[in-house]
Amino acid sequence: MSVDLSTPAGRARTSPRRRARVSRGIQYVVLLAVAVLLAATADWSTVGETIFNPAAAAEIVDSLPRAFLNTVTYTLVAFAVGLTLGTLLALMRLSSVAPYRWIATTYVEFFRGIPALLVVIAVGYAVPIAFGIALTSIIAVAAIALGSVAAAYISETVRAGIEAVPRGQVEAARSLGMSHTRTMAKVVLPQAFRTVLPPMTNEVLLLTKDTSLLFILGQTPAQFELTKVGRDALSTASGGLTGLFVIGACYLVITIPLGLLTRRLERRTGGRA
Image (cartoon, rainbow, N blue to C red; front, side, top):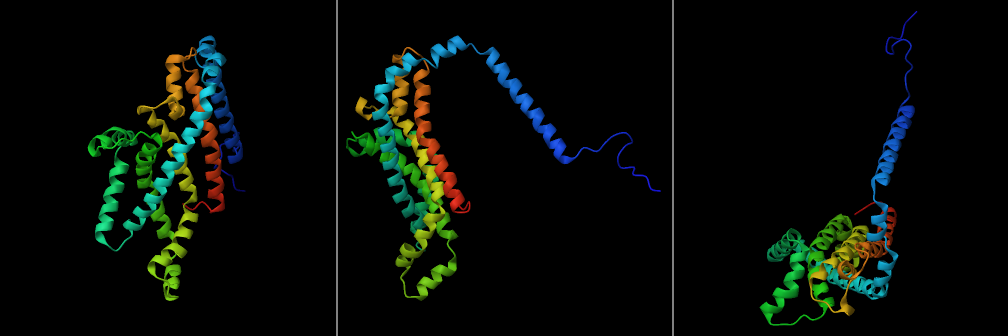
């Protein structure tokens, strides 16, 4: 008769499923305790007056539709520039002409290495001084500044998508007599863009938030984007930080659907990026 010595007498072995349930239960208890502690220690009267003040929110409601539309407009023009320039840079990075590769690499490393705020300031103030031009349109500044920064990131995404296209398809197109340019336009780029749709959607989401950097430029009320409205509310609204929380909710109206679209595209493309 054999005796199982692996488990001490009088102690039952706990199954992995039971241990997982116990672990989850402990985590739920800890999270509940933290929530109760925060709720008990918060000064709700001050929170209601400073952060969730309906009267203060009502003061900026009239400014929100135009600011919301401006934010979306700045995002779209910046993405249009970024996508166009980024695709060109990606093709230059893959070119057999060495100077093209050097120029594209220098551009990408430069704009990925400096803060977008510095680019906005440079385009808004330094470029007009250097070239003697007046950029009075915030849309133009958004397109140039934010589009230039976005192009550096988009180019890397597009380049990865191009390199992901099977080499055999390129060779098959060339064997049918298609030129290199036509092969790239008709065979490679369409497949590459399908592959990189999810990260492209993420870039739109990031650009939406980067439009908040435009508040540093002088703007007329008709040019205000969401962050500018929220920043002005700090000094004009009686509810303190209420305006900022309202603006944050407006950004979520834009970014949450974009996030859902990104996940849907990732599922449709099999998670490829």
